[in-house]
Image (tube, rainbow, N blue to C red; front, side, top):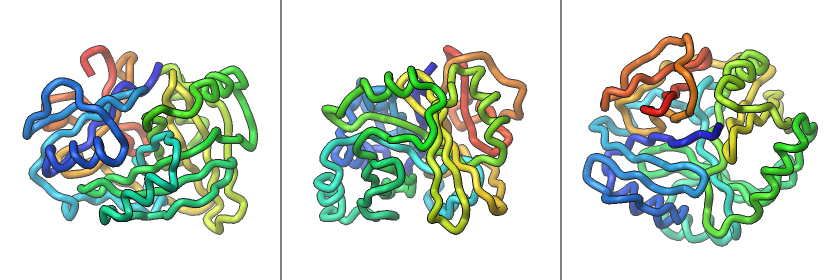
Length: 257
């Protein structure tokens, strides 16, 4: 089963709607209000929700070694052209376009409230393929006509435990990428559900923990289909029950998620 929706908290919904529709060609579904907007990202939706607390209140760090949410990834065409438009508009970049492991081209940039976003161009060439059928289905999606949601990236402590947990929601472990030139010694695994992916990062050095914050600007939580897990839960500002996995990644489940 896929990731159905990702909730992104923002301090100005209209500003974020303009950003996501302009930078990633997401399309507004229904009517956007000052409190909430839902955007179509082809394979999932991105839901923007208003919060009063800005970027300075978030404890999220972009250092990669903090467990839990890292970034949202979108498959695109014409990556360098798109990145050039964003740079001309003054968008803050974490990583300029470059060729990455797996023979893809990537870049990273921030939305207006500090949520880290990635654009990826090309089919990922895995170091090890563990589910050839799933990889074939992924590649059959082809070059997107407009940017499509691809993955949520998460830093984790225990890959086998994470794989077992998300297997309950239809995610299969399809392949790996290694980063031999990175001194931190990190490894990437790909858990695919439907047309979406959980991209999980493990490191050979110590990582830090972070409790999710559902009431500050930035990534809120993901929504999956399935049964409620036996995990700690917190309540989002709109009353949604959100579960927290062992690495601090927050997600809601079920038809009412």
